[in-house]
Length: 112
Length: 112
Image 1: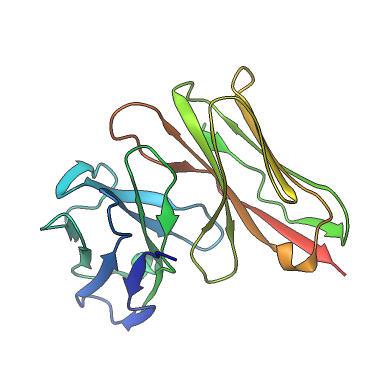
Image 2: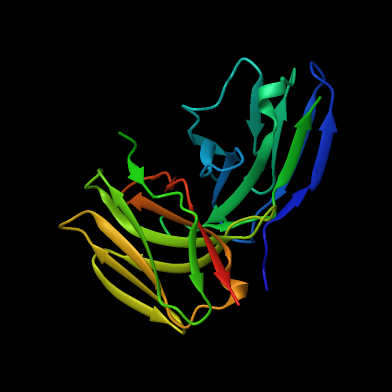
C-alpha cells in the first residue's frame, strides 16, 4: 500500500539551530501539504504545493520557515533559527487535486 | 469564530456503544468532507471521505453531511477499545487549489 514517507520521525534541536524535515508523497499525487500540529489541537496548514508551485503559504512564518518542492515530487521544510515555540508535530500529506489527503507519520520536533 | 468547530471531549463510552461525533462549519464553499482517526503520536489516518450532502457507510462507520445546516457527523457502531483515539474532521472547497481545514479533534475513550 502506498504511503507518505517522512523523516526523521523524531528530532531534538537546540534553540537557534537549523532543522529540516523531508517528505516523499504518494506517487502521482500532485498536491503536497505541510501541516503543524500542536498537542491537543488540529493540524494547521503551513504550506500547500501543486506540483512544484506554492499555492498557499499564507500561514508560513517566512522569517524563519522555508519550504521547497523543486522537482514536484519530494519536499523539504526548513526552520532556521528554531525557537522553543516551534516544538510540535510536523505532518506531510499528499493528494490528487481536490480529493482525500493521506498523511505520513509526522516528525515530532522538540526545541530545547 | 473558527471555520470548523469540533468539541474536544473527551468522550467516554462503554464498549459496544454507538458513538456520535460532530463538526459544524461556517464556510458554505466546503464540498469535500473527511474524517480522520489519530492515535497518540501518530499521523492522521483517513477513515471516511464524502462529497456534498448525504450518507456514506463503511463497516461500523457512517458519515453524514448536512450542507443546509453546515453540520457533519461520524457514527461508530459497536465501539471497541481499539477505537480509542482522537477523531478529526476536515473539509475543503471544490474549486482550484482548496486548502484542507481541520477541526481541533475529539478524543474518544472506549472502556472495556
